[in-house]
Length: 624
Image: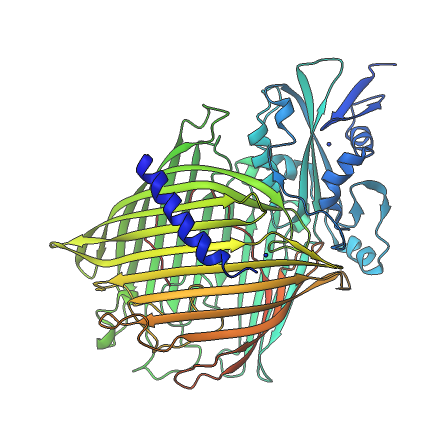
């Protein structure tokens, strides 16, 4: 343990120094209801409306809840940065008498349930919107009545509900009772987004992509989505995808997704345009006090010659995917004050080609050959959260994790008649600095020991830093920086490194820039403005990427680095289900092949958030 502490300390100092250098920087049966020190009086507490009417009138509670109203303005506001369990700790161990649900439509302010936002578009939207049913919210509540209150469990549940795609924000408020000192009521307050959405992306005169969806169909926490693609060069000209998703089926916390696609958007592992139908079941580990997590996926895929390629060129194949993983959280119901946990998990993956391409050159291509592997993981983790704002969102509450996770991986793979063992380590440490910065360090290493040497081995070191939010007049400024180094060696079935991914230059696509060593850094500054258009906030940004890549026999600094610089604007209306929209302009001073130095990119329905998963399915170390 001492050695690990020394390791993390040394790694932290290294990344902190390097990354920090980029910043120049809640009299009849009368009860007393208290919320974090404020006390008010109400006459009855047996209805949800009366409780929330009382609770909302306290000044402090209005501050706690203002993140759900969507009325914040950047100018002079204090950005919320508190530990997620802080509001619940004074009530630790008290018995939960009842759990009350107060759900607010997307157009209503939670701090004033009689005043609607005066917006014609919102009124029209209200006629189309299906309000979330109370039972749907209850299906996502995993603390129980008549049980002792666990402050950390409530914080985990608040964060879990807030992360649902049909909810803008969520707050859980503990209501203490004067008539009984050992019991409390718990009020869960949520607010919908306008769940109907879509996008339209023309790609010239002859090609168009679009999507239409309802993320909360009938108010039942289910998503229906239809994606379409029209292209005159395609045969048939029109293709589509239809899929369905249900969140926390029957209160089980299992998410179910099923669909059919002609758009190469299933669990695709091949290189051609594919059609597929698929079924996915997932149960995340929603809290360190939960016991089980796992997932199950079935997919049937086949390539389709939509673009009339010659038979000698088109790869005609068909395959099935069967993927199952299951994990158990050791000591989940013990050590309520200590969130350190040990999690054991196992995964079985099978990709079977019932039809393979006839091309000779693909006979040894891993992408077109059957693959089977199993992986086991033993994970140590301790993770807690801060609540803050303006990281990736535009004022909504965001949860930033801090703590550590380390997984020891071991397993076996059969690919191309190579039956090899696999060993790996995946470690991550997140910090919140006293000055307001927060950052994450990662160490990942893995490979196949085979016949006395390591094959398809990977080493990846990375760090990410977000600066403290800065106020400048009516604006808020957030800076971020990334630094990562990757080294692969003895590649036999795995691909080489490239600079086209999240570890490279954004928007850059070059097939010929490959290597075994890569160093990458990124800086971004986002200016959250008070400007709005039809409720869409605007956030101008500037960014810069640099990536250096080298082959096995050459020093990493031998060749000229690749740069990408640019600017753009990010926009989002937090009351709508639409993801973030980004408009970006890129400039690459150094290019290869026929890549243009200039590029304009538009990304719609972008979903970006700070990752805070406790555990994940065992997997090989990914580096591209």
